Image 1 (cartoon, rainbow, N blue to C red):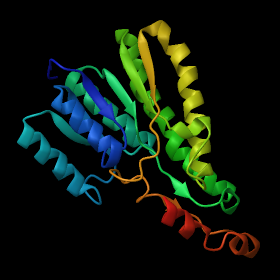
Image 2: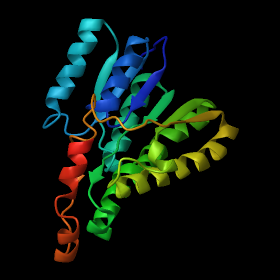
Image 3: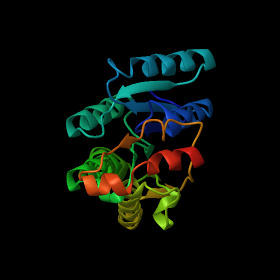
Amino acid sequence: MTTTTGDIVVITGASSGFGALTARALADAGHTVYAGMRLTTGRNAPQVQAAADYAQEHQVDLRAVELDVNSQESVDAAIARIEAEHGRIDVLIHNAGHMATGPAEAFTPDQLAELYDVNVLSTQRVNRAALPGMRRRGRGLVLWVSSSSVKGGTPPYLAPYFAAKAAMDSLAVSYAGELARWGVETTIVVPGSFTSGTNHFAHSGHRDAPSRRVRDQYAGLMDQVAASS
């Protein structure tokens, strides 16, 4: 077990975008930051190296950790490793998420469920692994990266993502009331629409309409939205 003067911070979905930017900023501020990401020896190997390079160049404590929020086994292993190394987790940041663009009607129920799994159920997997330690110590901060869309979404044609974020936001509010008695604080961050500077839109999924009727009615619409954003 190692000791540090700053907080021990875990950020999910930190291979790129808000997650990577936040990880670097918190490491620069003197905290020990674990940037959670999946496929650390595969697709995200360059991101793992980028985090290591940043840590060495700036002399900060930034570490990539294998953490697939869609796998309870992966989540449990990551949290157990961090607690074994430091004895605690001070700050947990729920940043992992996925966005999909297209008319709401074009998504099947199973496709909606996939987005809920990434954006909502993933937070429950991580909470169940990390919160017991916070409650035992009587302190901690859980920070949820929400979206301004929960109060009425813009831009258009992101309904499945907006609905998932609204569900996550509601879960966060409920957790806030439950965790307060244990000294664990809750913060909800509500970013607006960032069309550049992150990979949010670049990595968003797209769904083909399930019927010719829907395809015909929405033909060319997403191209128009992209051109105007």
